[in-house]
Image (cartoon, rainbow, N blue to C red):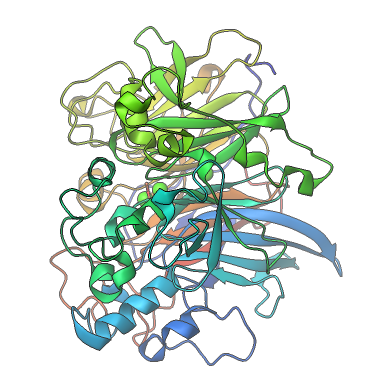
Length: 584
Ligand code: FEO
Ligand code: CA
Ligand code: CA
Ligand code: CA
C-alpha cells in the first residue's frame, strides 16, 4: 500500500453558517429528512408511540435512545429499491427527557424507569430502502432487531472468556452476559459484521467493593464504583457490593452479525477492555485486519488490534473467529514525529506476574494499566479513529482535555478545550510509522485559541471538539463535533458536520456542511457505498442544561416533531442531493 499523496476530489457545496436554531441546516442543493426516531416501532402491530405509557418490554421492540454510531450494510436490491441494514448504537438514556412524571430516585418507579433505560440503550438493526429518491425504514422487516442492556444474551470469546475474573453469582462460566451498554462509536468489518463499543460503562456501576477485593486496583484505574449509581440502586446486578465482577464484563468491543437476527453477539476480549469509543477497520496490504480504537478519557491512549490471520473476502464465515487471535498494541507518539506501537502481550516487557499480570486475560482486562507500564502517550481524549484504506492514513479525533497542564508534541495545548486531529501514517512495508498534526480546533481569528487550520478556512469552516469522523467512498474526511453547552456558547454555533481536505495545498481546509438542532450533537456520519446518501445521527436534541427546570414539559427544543405533547427525540437523518448525485 502506498502512503504517497493521492489526488482528492473537491467539495463543491456552498458552505453553511455557524449558528443556533431549533431546526437542522444542510448545504444548499441538499435535503435532510428524518428517517427513524426514538420510539418508532420495529415490529408490526404496535400502538402509536406514547412515551407516557411505555414499559420496558415495549421499549425493547422500539428504536432506542440517543443514537450514536451508524453503520450501513448494503443488501441486494429488491423490486428496484436500493436497500440495506442500518446498524445503530444507542449510547445512553436521558431520564429527564424520557419520563413525563420526572426522574424517580427511589422505589418501584425507579426500577421501572431503569428497566426502560436498560431497554433503550444498546443497538438497533433496521432495514432501510430507497424508493423514488426517498429513504424509509421497513417497520416489519424480519431483519429488524433490538439488542439491549436488559435481556439480550451475549457471549465472550478470546483470551478473557471463561476466566474467573468474569464469573459472577449469575454466571459461573464467565462466558455469558446480559447486554451491552454505553455504545458510542463502532465500525463495520469487511465481512459485513458490526462492531459496537462499550464506552462510559463505569457510569452505570455503583456501590463499594470490599476494601480488600482483588479488583480494587483494576476498578480504580477505570473510575468504577464508590458512590451509588442510578442503575445500582435499582438493579443489584450493577451494585459492586453485591456483584463485584460484573464490571469486568463491560468495556469491550462487541461483534454483531446484522444479517442473522437470531445470532448471538460476541464480546471480543482480544481487543482489550477500556472506555471504547470506536472500532473502525482497515485491511492491510498483507491481508490482515487492523482495528483502530480510542479510549475516550483525558490522558488515555490510542490502541490497535492486528489480526493473526488474513481476511477472507470471499467467505464471510471464514472470518468468524478472526477477532479472537492477534496482537493488541498501544501508541507512543514521539516528539520527532515517530509513531511506535508497543505490544500488549503477556510475558513481554513489564506484563508479568511481578506487575500482577498472570495471563493474557489479565492484560486485556486491565489494558489501561498494561499500557501505563508500556509508557504509551496520554492523549487529549481519543474518540473516533478513522482509517482510510486507500491512502493508508488514519485520522484520530481528540475532542478536548481541560485537565492538561504539561504539553507534548502530540497534545500541544494546556487546558485543551477545543481538541485536535492527529494523522497517523502507517507503513506496511517495514518502514517507519509516523504521525502529523492535521488541525487544532478553535477560532483561528482569536490568537488565544491557538487554533490551526488551512489559511483559506472561512469564518464558518473552523470547528472545535472533533468526536466522530468518516472517510467517504471518494476518500474524503468528514468530521462531526461534540462541544458541550459551554463551548458552544463561546463558539457561537451548534455542533455540526464539516468536510475536510487532508492532502495537497488544501490540507487542513474544512467547510461546514450540516448544523444540528439546539441541544444536540452530530454523531454517526456514514455514507452509502455510492456516496449519494449520508446518514447522520442526531443525539440528545434538547438536552437540558443543569439550570433547566422540568425539561420534559419545558424542553430547550422539541425537534423533530415540534409537537407540544412530545418531548424531543433522538433520530437518524438522511441527507441526499436534491438531484440525486453524489454528495459533494
Ligand atoms: Fe461517547 Fe466519546 O463520545
Ligand atoms: Ca463519541
Ligand atoms: Ca466513524
Ligand atoms: Ca459524544
